[in-house]
Length: 379
Image 1 (cartoon, one colour):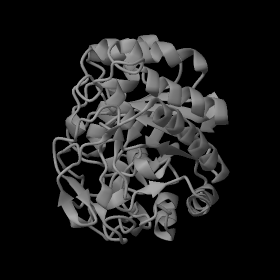
Image 2 (cartoon, helix red, strand yellow; image 1 turned 135 degrees about the vertical axis):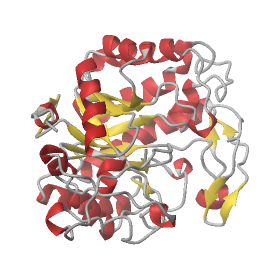
Image 3 (cartoon, rainbow, N blue to C red; image 1 turned 45 degrees about the horizontal axis):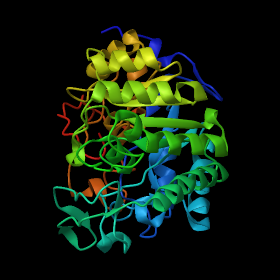
């Protein structure tokens, strides 16, 4: 089969040259210390994948209230900065480039994990149990954020962005997707506010816009990306007015000169993709919908997005199981099969740093992975 070379062409963000259009998407793997400090094992994991055009490192919390699950990374203390510096040094030594995703969980959190009552736009609990150090527990009713909470959280994102740059990242990605705090402000069923942050589309995009603007003011727009997931219902989200919502957000932030806008599960055949592409004047990263994880399917889905106007392609699970994914896709080699199991979100090297590269593959052991995607935290 002949594969397109477009994926492997050099590309550029406003402040950064990339060797290819292939981006490693942020993948939550729960390998940090209990306090959120990145571990040496994480440095190994990311350095193995440094051939990506850009790595967007996993969701990292900007303050203690933002913690979601156990052993999630953070970036609000000197220990966190030092831990991340070891990771970025390892990736840079291997020739790579990294952004860090900043994520506040909002109602996707629990006192058994963070020691704090979760904050959210409105006191609407997560409609499911949540993983904690004590096992899965019923969710709790979050505390509705006050105007002061909102101002403080915006400032915490800006400070976390500064910490990320101090830790050696080229920039950060503001996470406004997948049912976490910023997405909760966007959605009608989780945002019942009657003040300037709720109700109309313009009011519901305000918090995401203010966080993005504050981060850009702190570290530069060219170092600031934004991730969104239009229409995604994960974590109990029901947005309402999806097309209008994301068109308005793209129009409000389009003049800032942000590094990129990153669409989760981007589908070039949908109106929301076309509307966002039309409204967004800058770099657009598309995270394609894969029917399976295979070389052929990655090329098919990526090619469709590039043809529809995406500038870069973000891949999650393919990078998880293939540290040398760029080489495999460039040469048409088969992909490692991803090993599902309890080790996905626990500590240790198994299912994390032990996936072989092509030059270490036992004879006859490699076969294209045909793994249906289930939309969990690493999708």
